[in-house]
Length: 382
Image 1 (cartoon, helix red, strand yellow):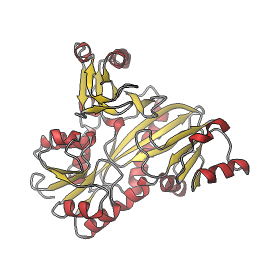
Image 2: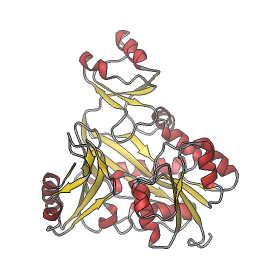
Image 3: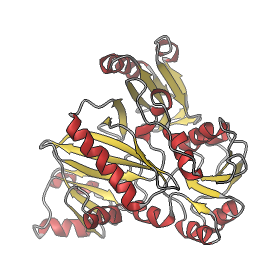
Image 4: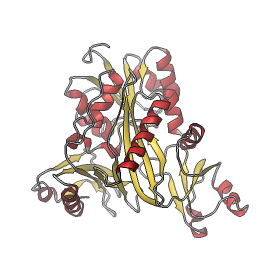
């Protein structure tokens, strides 16, 4: 392994995940650059080596990665052909393009789980909205179901819940995965990490609560209150999937626990993830440091919980669009164990991710109480 200070690391994307990756790497004086098409992105606040270009344009990605030792991502919507080319030229690309190509397409994800025996909900693949409606008429598809765009769905976008015929006008006219509606008891996540030597570590289970309108994570809590047997099943699924794929880096595995106690994979992300933000304050090794350890060949860090924690996503308030203002900050910062992270996005809009707050305490009950106060007090308005 080369000295980590001489390695040139390129991150495709300069959003909040890129920002927090850079912050983790700066402690070890890592040489990190970010590729983004705009200078007005969260990572630009901290990363002096911002390169202008599009992460989806072949030539931009190749030009950016040509002098790098390692290229990684903070979002899946990147030019995979360019990553294959860089890999062929000797650049270490993590996650590997072959894995990213599967994960980027939710249909291929589901087929992968089915082929390799990983538990997931029943599904079908459809070309467009008309194809879905024909399946309903023919009796091959029944309400309720969930439609997910196969590519580019993110942060609740590209997901439609269809409970009855009256919801059909909501259908997305795109290639989709359609899943039977799972009777969900809890939604959970486990992040697995695997380094270049094949060392594997998993983080403990977190429980997630989703915003009913925006369909993205609003709160999470750890440690989970699930029974130990179910937690072990979830952790083993995430670890086994990371091993089977052979991924280098992080694999965030979002899962359902249904009302019968079954653990089912929902979808995965091959990068730092919203369900791991809290690890910065409440875990021995943050997910961001862990990702950098994994892709640079360092030993993986301890994933033990330091203390119970909650994470509250700061979303733009409904009916507010414009320059961002944070209302209630002074009140929440009077509380011990409250750590706001503002992403530096200048403009807010309804349900846009503007930041998060980690809340720590001595018990899960304590952090739940404090998280409720934070959620009700700290607002992003215009």
